[in-house]
Image (cartoon, rainbow, N blue to C red; front, side, top):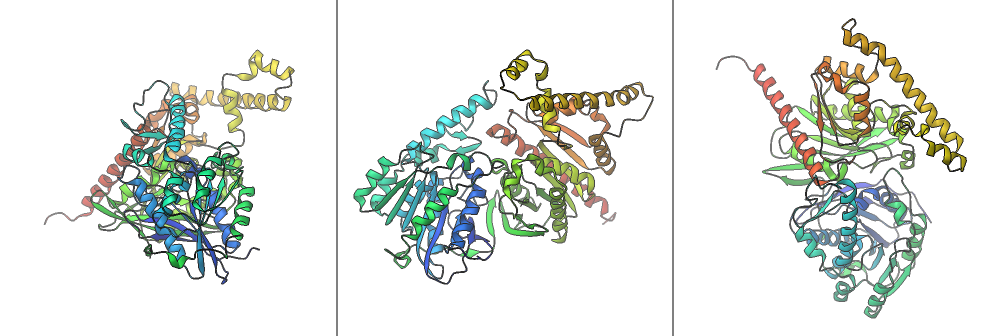
Length: 609
């Protein structure tokens, strides 16, 4: 049975050493029952599974289970960073405190935890330390920290071979650390993870029931089940089909429907038996309105916000200085494709806090269907949905909201992938935007044939004999050949259309061409004095297109535009050296903005004493 639930609300739990950001999905039911805590996985799996965890929490609340989903310290919107000390203890403390907060909710008689990946191993450790969790679901969870690390090292090796085959980027993770998909485990964290053992931890204090779900039939849960049964537990095991689809890519959204149903059925059988939450002696953390973190020698405050739109609400975080005056400029961080507001590898969180520590407030937002915003995430299987007028209208609404909050008056837009596209176009349309910092945009001008033209340019495939052989064998359809041929023709026509204007420009017989939409927007930004930074990693198609179309070779036409090359060749700048270079770039632009504001303030001061 499902019921209408109250709107989900963001919460901040005052937990040491790092405050915990979460979202609470309450239920309309007044019948006593069980609550659920969703413990996230680590790294890329945490990013890709976010929207599925949101939908899972919504469903559980509709079924009568108040549900809390959290970001672990140093991840997502919670406080802390991956290089802080005692990460494993901080993660377990966050789970223990979150379970205690849930257990103290009115009408909650017991707490269940759903542990995903590493989150499951951490949940078991938190139970051993006193977390009031009676029912534990472990899906794709490692049996030990060593098995988790063994798998992560294998992934890291594959990443290094693909992203840095020549070793040009240096060590990916520090002398002894481990970088996996752009996420870091420090030597201390690795050492602490190696000590974790699910069965050994639960020997100290165990839940009453455990449901073990493998990872698409590939991971064996039988060994852990055998080790847990002597602890007088009710242990069940089943196939956990759907994990790989759920964590594949945030744009290829997939809900693990069979898992949702299986877990709901299992939870329903345990709501009226066993230990109640009254037995817990874990202190209940305070639920506070904002998260405060230390950034250098400054204090930074983060507050959740919502922005109403025709389709529902956008969701985001305002970051502002807590102990120093505001600068007259505000940063807006836009979604990097389908990645939620934390940005690529949490880059936006780190940058926003660094900027706020120097007095610049910021907003990082989720647009329609992304992160915690309303809307359908499935639409982004068609990447063209990132480039609709409705998407752009939401970006404009964010700038309006920034102004309404009294921030600014100047605004800086920062984006990667589709976020870079909208930073560019919004800056051209809105004079309140004084700078657009654009990292690896997926497009500068979007049309439905763009991706096909890019494919056609990959070596002129349609002219290669191998293509015709594959066509004869039926491996490629005629429709595919026709689409690519059309894209080749369109590319050729567009190139020919540019020739007369380019020739005339070189001969000095006419003014520079302005009919090209990229150049036209660049002209607008130049005339307004808007700062534009275009930052590219290697092998980015937009860079190649701008070079082919002559924009790169004519940047002297736009002195407001700077071209920057980032190390590596990954679109989402995952390698740590690339992330560090991107942060240095953003810090440099912050220096420039603050110097500009300082010079403006000095010019306005009256002469004399």
